[in-house]
Amino acid sequence: MSTIKDIPINSIDASENSGESCSASEPFALRMLDTSMSPEFDIDHIVIIDPSITPKNGDFVLYETKSSLIIRKIEIAENTVLKALNPNFSDMPIENTDSVLGVVTQRSGKRRKYHKKYG
Image (cartoon, rainbow, N blue to C red; front, side):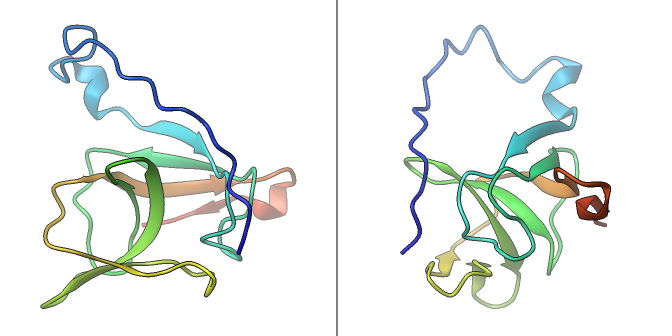
């Protein structure tokens, strides 16, 4: 099993981030902290998430679980599944896409050859 960096998620007051401003749908960046999506996304790759895009089958998505945020490949069918590319991580069936926070649109790494656009 791969080691996952533990980064606490701190709750914020709803009045601070109500999602009603235009910035709520602006793309944002995250750093990969584990190898669950290796080889496509390795530790320390930066990914750009666009919350305004509706996920479609085969997209890489940011999903909010009860305890963390994860990036997975979504397979939308009769039974929707979030798939990890690394076989050491389990796939996750989901009932709906309500907890999908956005779609990965770009990836970058330490070298230009690691940069990639999706979509």
